[in-house]
Image 1 (cartoon, rainbow, N blue to C red):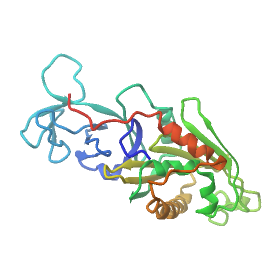
Image 2: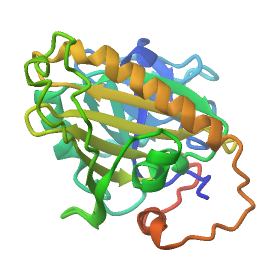
Image 3: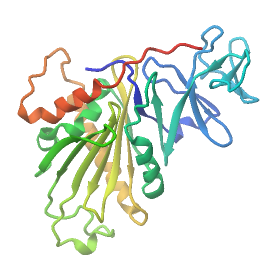
Image 4: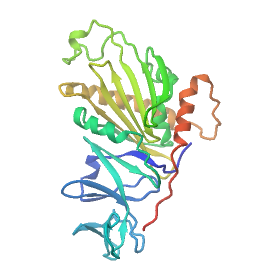
Length: 313
């Protein structure tokens, strides 16, 4: 199982975790610092080029630079556009969507896989809110794998019925899982929401999951006129475990559905953690035909480069 930091996207934090002007934001062994300026949030490598102090612990923003807490050196934010001798730290791409903050780490080609576009669309239609944040004593890639493990929905989460689950590769190289979860009635019926009037109609929500990295999967769930989104991410903690985060979004006018979505996300993650934290990673998996999508996910993960801890320029 992948335990190192990989290239690609991470659901790195919720906005509430980054309320200071300068905040440490490590991803596994990759030491990072988040800097909140007047107009945007920026994420950069955190090692001071002078002596390696972590700029997220005691560093301060001053005149467009980070002042190192160890020796007071002024460190530039990102590679300078012109000539100059001032030391600097590398900047990483950041996209905020509602409460969720996504960071892309890369040492090579663009491995966005289409997530930028998806987050822009969500920000305009279903901005994300925090649902769950939990430490997990298991490898980060297990969290996203769940979307492609068909049998666990019925065995672990007691989903009554699923059908048509098929995986494929999307146009941007993302991994896609499509299917349906037929239900006897809408879970929103009788709750004062839009589904109440249609309680007698069959409720056949589509399950449409797209993994954009080993650490981020975006799932749309529901019929076309009642879809909501669940974004699941995992950030390695550098000790073999991770922090799992779930964010949810609904269209305007359906905000009353958010409490149930949050509660469902908490319940499902709790059920998953009970299994993840007791898996034996030394057991060699014996995949069969039912695990085809899980195998595809593992192959997808292998397409992302493992990154070192990063070095100051």
